[in-house]
Each structure stands twice: as structure tokens, then as C-alpha cells.
Length: 239
Image 1 (cartoon, rainbow, N blue to C red):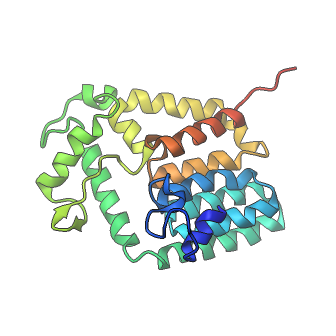
Image 2 (cartoon, one colour):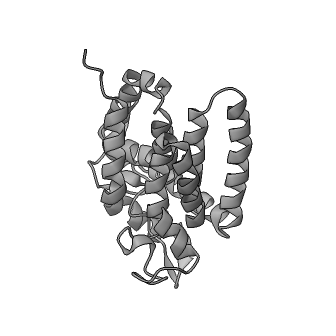
């Protein structure tokens, strides 16, 4: 977190300013989401440092995940104060990104296209596709080509930005594993619903919020810590 903050201020003698946080985590968005996962369980003195680092990445998903996860952790009057802080942080995230609205509209268009054309082939529909999906990692082979076919997406250097992932883990699960796979995921949430009431339940909230806007479980250096934290939060107490 301190490295990210320092680098945003131009102080990075090891990796250089343009290589990205720490030089190993890909980009600021990935790093912001990684740090956001730990905000709800960090001691309060560390929360300040982590939130400062998350805000400096300007990642809307990370900012929302961190603050809503922290809001879940607070009680009473502090929750109302936290809600106000969340609104300020959300506005900061939007103000710091000039293309947030365009990104949101593009995501909705791509999600609608994916759920409208279950088979991945225009103007065709099979119940099998809706119930079973096409298998894990099938998104990139079906949806990205449809984006180019119908010119859905933001333009970058004259080319359509293809969604190799759905930028929404829940929609990607629904598309790739069908209604059956999505039902199993919902069943998991129902079975572990009590975990949200635990002191560290804010971690699950942060991961869910990030998963609605991004694809943390498709990036190893974010997905592995997220899976580890989910395992810790849903652990059973051994008498």
C-alpha cells in the first residue's frame, strides 16, 4: 500500500513511475482490487493506509468494494458516517475517471448481448445453452467475436475493446455454466449466509462488489488471495 501511494507521488526509485504498482501486479486497477479485499478486516490504523492506496489507484470497483466492505463492518452511528464517506469516495472515483459512464454503458450492452444470445450465434436459441451453458472460459470465444460483429464496445486505436472476460463474475458464471451453475452459486451463498454476520463478513461484501464490476477470479494474483479470504471467512469452528 505504501509503495502504491509513493509511486503515485512520483517516488519510486526501484521500478520507475510508469511500470505500475510494485511492478508485479499488472496495473493500478488490479492492485486496487487486491488491497480493497483486506480493508474490511485490517486494524483501523492500517485501514487509513489501505484506503489511501485504494483511492490513489482511481479504480471504481476497488473504491466501492473497499468502502462498502468497511461499511458492513461498522455499527450504529458509525454506519451512517461510513455511508456518507462511501458517497464521497464514489464521487471521487467517478470524477477521477473520465470514461466511467461510457464503460458502464458498454458493460450493460455486452451483458445484454451475452444473455440474449445464449448460443453465441446470432438469432439462435437452445434451451440446452440456457441451462448448461457452454463451459468455463467459453466467453472469450463467443462474446468477443459478437462484439466485433455488431461493433459493441469502446474504441481504442481504431479497434473495438473486446471483453475477454465479462467484467462481472456473476454474469460470466451464468453465461458459461447456465442456469444450473448459477443456481449452485446461489445455493452456496444461501448455505453460507451466516458468514456475512461474522466480524469479517465485510470481506465477502468487498469481493462481491468487486465481482459485479470486474473479474477478480480470472486474475491469479487477485483471485488467489480472494479465494483464501473466502475460505477463512467461511471456516467452521472446531470444538
